[in-house]
Length: 70
Ligand SMILES: [Zn+2]
Image (tube, rainbow, N blue to C red; front, top):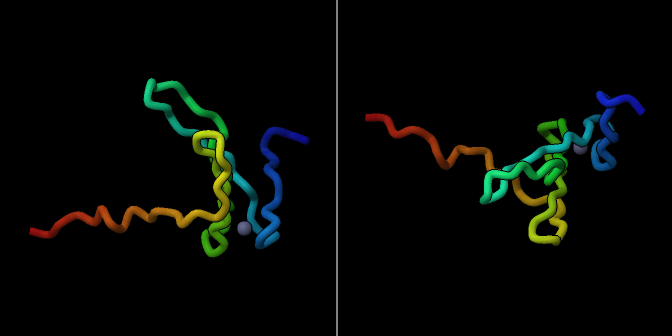
């Protein structure tokens, strides 16, 4: 398996699961903390937090941070 080949999403079978990394409170990188489907209309995701695995949590779109118009 080459490095640029990601596992196929089993949910929609059209997207790929992309590994996402995060940074801990100490600034240390947490590699492959979450896997998210590359298909926006699918949104399948799996992530680990404090040793627990979370499946298909809603993805924050950032829309709640919409800039205020003066
Ligand atoms: Zn998918």
